[in-house]
Image (cartoon, rainbow, N blue to C red; front, side, top):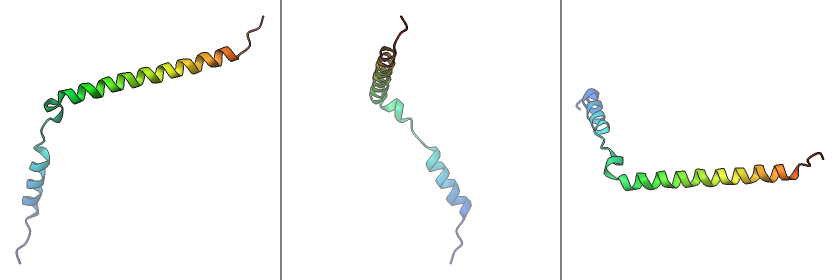
Length: 64
C-alpha cells in the first residue's frame, strides 16, 4: 500500500483555496443593491430611534 504524500495533498488543496476569483468584480449590481438596502435600512432605523426619542421627550413634563 502506497503512503500518502501529505505535502502534495496540502499543496493541491492550498492552490485550490488560493485560486479564488473576485466575486464582487463579476457582480457589481448585486453589491450596489446591498449598499442601497443597507443605507435605506440605516435610515429607517434612525427614523425609528428619532421618533422614540421625540415620544419620550413629549411624555416628560416641563416645569412651568
